[in-house]
Length: 127
Image 1 (cartoon, rainbow, N blue to C red):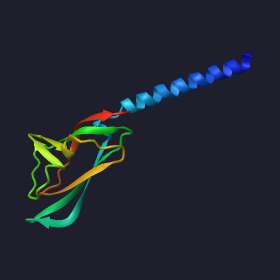
Image 2 (image 1 turned 60 degrees about the vertical axis):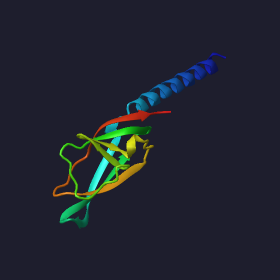
Image 3 (image 1 turned 180 degrees about the vertical axis):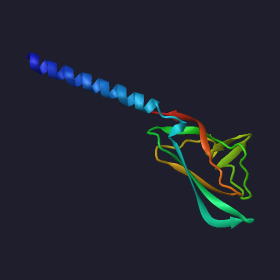
Image 4 (image 1 turned 90 degrees about the vertical axis):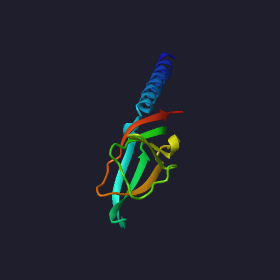
């Protein structure tokens, strides 16, 4: 009788530990889980090379309020403000709406040089 009780207790502890670790992993999601990739399209807009930017949420949780550092960013190609809106030196992605795990947003811009959009803030939501 004591052996089955110890087995049940062991399983309960393992389950509790897994839940604890899983919850900690989710709460560790941050703007650092936002992946930004850029590539040249091969097109030119007003004589400037065009770039394609893809921003993906690699977090296990949804993230909203994604902000990128846009200090010094300029483009001769218009970007829809519903996709990327500039507010000073910060760019707000998709009007602050949610990107679920694996979801992405993209846009194109044209400039003399490639600009690196670094994520600086987000609001992860693990449910």
